[in-house]
Image (cartoon, rainbow, N blue to C red; front, top):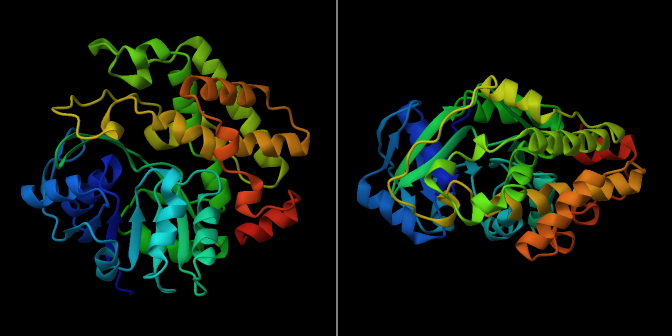
Length: 357
């Protein structure tokens, strides 16, 4: 059996939760890295990560918190990447000098085409012998940082779909990841996994059509995922139908956001754990990344592919326009496009070749 040594890249909500959960469940974390020194120093000063909430509790000792990416990459061969998806290509460039063909990189979670973008950035950085790259549908948990070096998991997913790039190496990815994250299961291919990311349907309508709660939060509004109404649910379903129609047309394997909620959480709503102190902007209950990540990294590609295929995407386009207005951005200029993914044809055979099916 291969010796897998796990390193967490990113010490935010997801990274600290994953590191703490893995350790307390009996899997060694060889290192945790973040370019932001604050959480790394908090972990070092605390002797590890304190875990609270209904899922798992206790102090998880972390042997090697580090602010050096080179150092982190020397400690392991399976890199569990938990940073915000917007920075995946930049991370790939930073990892390029140290990456080895025998390494495995898992993006937790992926967005539409994340593995393709990561691979392309490595290639553009001069990497010839590529590692195995994969991505997951979502984070393994519903979780937030509760304070410095203190994570609170309110729910662990029942199953977590993932896939490799190329897809023909799925079993190899599973062999490396499942011992560390037992909830993982295999999906068809990495592009399908990324385009099935459940966050856009679950975040964007709730955020945009509850903007008053976002900008003037009250204590009773702390549970973001309870903000749904008949209208926000309808908008989410309409967006989801457009996304799945695009995926089906190019031969990918869609999963509706409602199906995903069922397999991940059995349709159970979990109440957030009270935070003792906000340690970063991304640790608040309604971070701006609910728009700044989900719209450019997911909805832009759905819209572009839909237009190219002659599939109407009016709801997707409307959500993009409102997001641009609210965030004062032009996500169509910065988002993930077919050109950025290296997609020159939407024929099913071409897509299958691209994902390595």
